[in-house]
Length: 274
View 1 (spheres, rainbow, N blue to C red):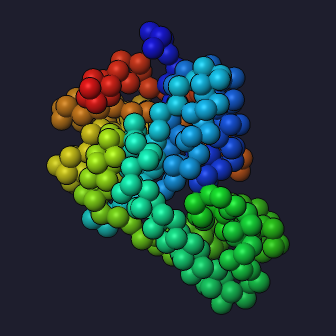
View 2 (view 1 turned 135 degrees about the vertical axis):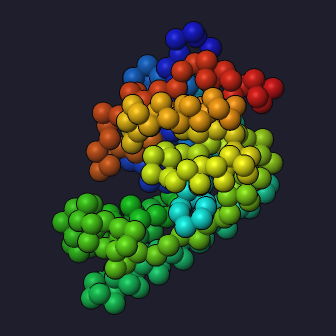
View 3 (view 1 turned 90 degrees about the horizontal axis):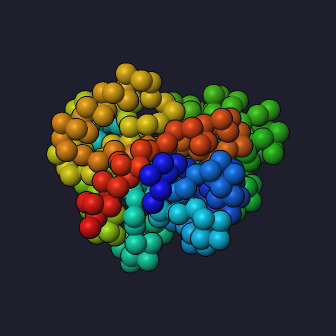
């Protein structure tokens, strides 16, 4: 690895709620002179093989990753996983189960929209999602296509936000189960974008054996970065960082290539794995 490598370990493709295909995303990473990236789709590893393949051709190293939703206390918490064995049987069994749960959740939200008087079906959503793990962004786009809302943001603000009239909570695996799943698949676990998490939740995850914390993230100001880096150092944890890039209507194009992980922090992950 180059001493001044540019590393971004948080981004999404069309296999979850990202705008770009794995190939398009890695090409974009190359244009921004990124050397090492991780594809961290929500509950999906389906884009990783394609990303690794194009990455080898372009000289971009792709780390197999994943973003998992868990429950801690009363909050939904996201965990990032890196260096996974994407052929691990238990990991794939879990992802297959939650892929179906995502479809069931979408059906429930559609029923709520129908009860509100809107004409929309699960087929409308699946047509948008294609091979992706179904999520609220796909439902928002389907609502746009049906003329229910004028844009993506209206769909969330009026109907799909966490306390919205069409919202349905996801089924989550417990944090302990998620951490075990990641470890058993050979991976390292990180608390994703913890900016709004209570300290008790952070401590619960640290005590449960999480490997690290995502410090550099677009939602973190300088004070928060310093705070989380302090926790990393205090508890001998690993540090991660990335742009959480989605593209398209997420309006985060300027973030890509801007929120990076220091090479020495990336090397620390390798030392732990070895």
